[in-house]
Length: 96
Image (tube, rainbow, N blue to C red):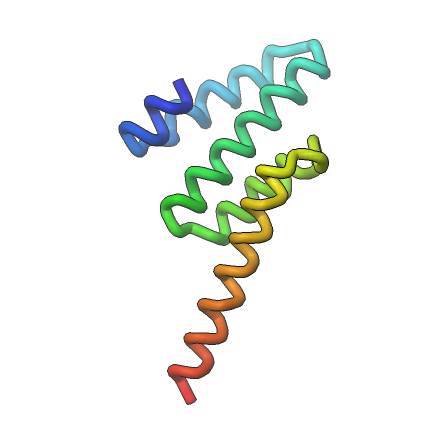
């Protein structure tokens, strides 16, 4: 569902709705934590691919809080920070 709705259709509203329903109804904390990790990680990656670095970092930080050992997630966050810094330097130099 995530692959189809996000990457093929570019629509995250159904993903948000499904996650909200799961948050309200799941009682098993371990399962909810794993689903939350997948939700935040995938939305972070999607936002990175779309160039929305602020949202990427917001979702990435939430996924990182759940599983800080994921090297793919660490890489995504590092690339988003580096890209933001480079863009900031370019904008600063352009405005001078």
